[in-house]
Amino acid sequence: MTKGSNKLAWITGGGTGIGKALALALDKQGWQVIISGRTEQKLQAVVELGQKIAYLTLDVTDREQSQQVFNTLYEKYGLPEVVVLNAGDYTPMPVDEFNLDLVYKLNQVNYLGVMNGLASILPLMKARKSGQILLMASVAGYRGLPDAAPYGATKAALINFCEAMYIPLKKQGVLLRIINPGFVTTQLTAKNTFKMPAEITSTEAAERIVKALASNSFEITFPKRFTYILKILRVLPYRLYFFFTSKIIGK
Ligand SMILES: NC(=O)c1ccc[n+]([C@@H]2O[C@H](COP(=O)([O-])OP(=O)(O)OC[C@H]3O[C@@H](n4cnc5c(N)ncnc54)[C@H](OP(=O)(O)O)[C@@H]3O)[C@@H](O)[C@H]2O)c1
Image (cartoon, rainbow, N blue to C red):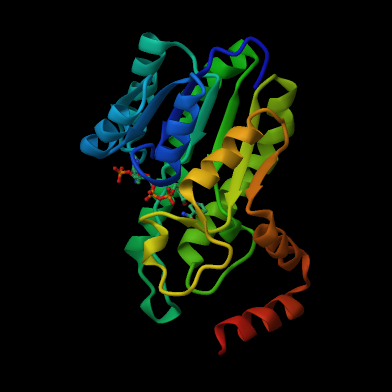
């Protein structure tokens, strides 16, 4: 946490999964948490589970609405100390089922949706010279993984973007960080038909994120027993990388 913390957090995609678990974990620690998402009933259900959770509905793909919702949040609650741009979507895409609509949709939610949130919050955070903004990417963004091309590409874009902005923003007092989880049990990963290695619960994922808020490392990644294997795959030369992926998919 940065100096002068006001313990106010904004989490997009806070109605379910990792965002919901994170909202509840921060709430337990006395934070005021504002959650956003498209589905009011889901957001309301999280509000009822917490002490100091409120919601503002938002479709992150809507550029104007993103700015308006942030303005409302700022007027009502102030400038958050922590913002987690977590809203995201995933659908696998086998190579023989190329789906351009899916490519557009995942880019609009996972990449441009995060950019909309970032654009709304960044000017005031820079002016204040403090605060943390966490972008929810994935280890699927480390390298291209079979069946995850459109999703992985959006997460790779976030990682690259965040790498480029980290140092310049840090010099201005704003910590822009990336979260790269492995497999977490949520409605999103329920779409996977394979056994997910080292899968953890959303509560465990939230615990790792909350713990990491006290540090200022660039990346938050978990569970390390899995994500560090992917880090090794990330630095392999293509020939070796494709050798291993072809073994994994058995093709
Ligand atoms: N689960 C994993 O293994 C895993 C691993 C790595 C990274 N991640 C990332 O973690 C994030 C959270 O995913 P999750 O696993 O917790 O799945 P989830 O439960 O499906 O959460 C995604 C949330 O995003 C919201 N959302 C989707 N589209 C939106 C839009 N256009 N505008 C506003 N909100 C939107 C959804 O709410 P509404 O539908 O109500 O809007 C939902 O609450 C995602 O970015 C995902 O890519 C997950």
